[in-house]
Image (cartoon, rainbow, N blue to C red; front, side):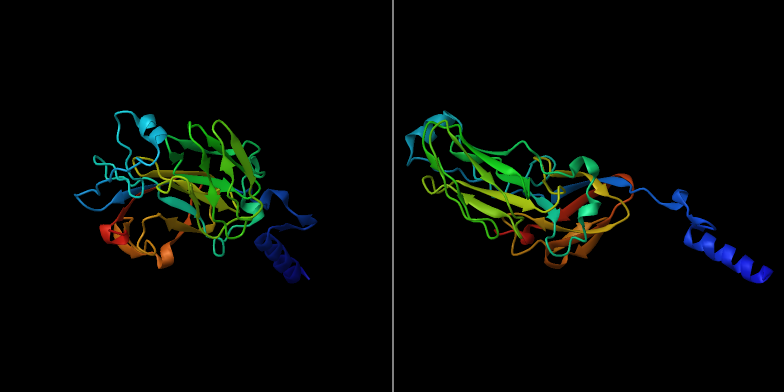
Length: 275
C-alpha cells in the first residue's frame, strides 16, 4: 500500500493535481506578445514611381496644385529601402488562431468605423485593415463625385456613389480570404485594398517598411500571409533571420515569446515583384 501511495503522489505531481483536486497554482495564464518586422527591398536601385495623369478631371488636377501625384503600386524609401504597404495578416485557413487566442482588450470589433477617404482623387489609406464585424466609412473629401466599388468575395459586393462631402458606411459581416480591391470607376487610376480579417492581428508596413502587431498570443504557432499588391504571384523567396528561406505561397509561421519580438529585416529581391 505504501508503494501504491507513493506512485499516486508522483502521478498527481506530474499531472498538476493535488490529492484533493486540481491545483489552481498550476493553471498557466495566457501570455502576450508584440511583433515587429521590417520589409526591405533587396537592391541598390529602388523602383521609380510614375506620375499619375488626372487630366480627365480638372478638379483632381487642381487639388494637387504644383505637386505631382505618383503611382502607389510600389513605394520604396530611397534611404532605408523600406517597402511600404506590405500586409501581414492571419491566413484564413491555416492561421492556427482560435477565438480564445484574442487578447481580452481586443475581444470585440471596434465600434469606431475604419475610414477610407477619397482625398485628392486617391484613396487614403491605400491599403486599409479591418476586422469582421467592423464598419468601413467611405468619405469623399474632394470637390468631385466618386464611387467605391468593393469587389468582395465573402461579403456582399457594393458600389456606392459618394457625393461631395458625403460618406457611406459599409458593415463587414464576413472575413475575406484575400485583400479586396476597391476601385473608383469615375476615376480609373484610383484603387485601394481592404483586408478584412477574422482576428485583430493584421497590419500594413509604413513608409520605412516597419510593421507592428500587438497583443498576440505568445508561445503559439501562428501562420501569417505576407502580401503586397505588386507581388509576382506570391512573395516566396526572402532573406529572413540572416538566411535565405522559402515562404510556401507567401505563408510565414512564427512562434512568439512573451513581450516584444523584433524579428528584424525581411529582405525581398526585386524578382518577387512585377516589373
